Length: 244
Ligand code: BGC
Image 1 (tube, rainbow, N blue to C red):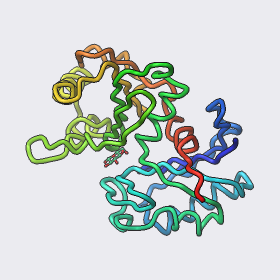
Image 2 (tube, protein in one colour; image 1 turned 135 degrees about the vertical axis):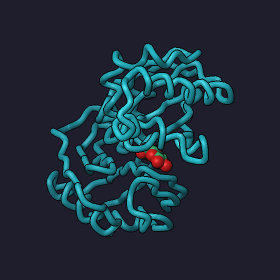
Image 3 (cartoon, helix red, strand yellow; image 1 turned 120 degrees about the vertical axis):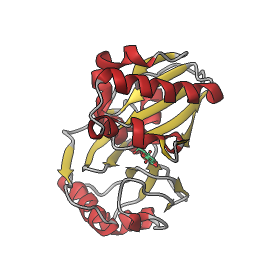
Image 4 (cartoon, rainbow, N blue to C red; image 1 turned 45 degrees about the vertical axis):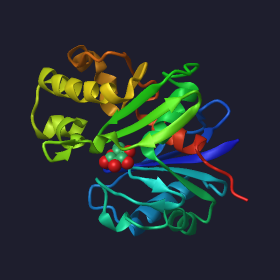
């Protein structure tokens, strides 16, 4: 019932033990900032440090910002390219000595939000977007979460996340109104093909929803995530899959 959740991000790796019956953290989250480039070997060492910090020997669920198929990492848009093709579960279980399963970070966030957060009790079609360094995405419907890569929808020859992620707002020095309007165009394009009934916006910037939600104007009801920065940790733990 207790699983260590670890969220791998571009600037930090953070983790905490999670009670998977309630979605609550069982200790203060432990965070290691990673200012320089994070290679797979370095990420594995940091994950091991997080496990040691909690004297952990049990199962670990890890959220990773890329496409995961089986145990393998297929993309790494905002982390080191050496992750591509690597057996992530073997990498992290060797380093920690624990059973590890890997989930896409946005799918992990969606699992947390649908079970214990902003989507709790809602079975209709839900689109979750996390706005951070990149854009994470998942579709949820009647209890199933499907990891997606809508952040890589091509706009003017580049991934949408290049224009409308939270870090793009800072890099492009856009006002909340300018960014909110561009984000609105992007979200309405997604709505044209996906028709979600509910849109949940996660990532650190969701705490500032009052500043930009009014400029987005989607068709569906749009709400900020409930877990804010902890969705990745909680969802990674909830997504742990027992094997054998
Ligand atoms: C990755 C996704 C990830 C998202 C948020 C994107 O660049 O391709 O897999 O969910 O960033 O971290």
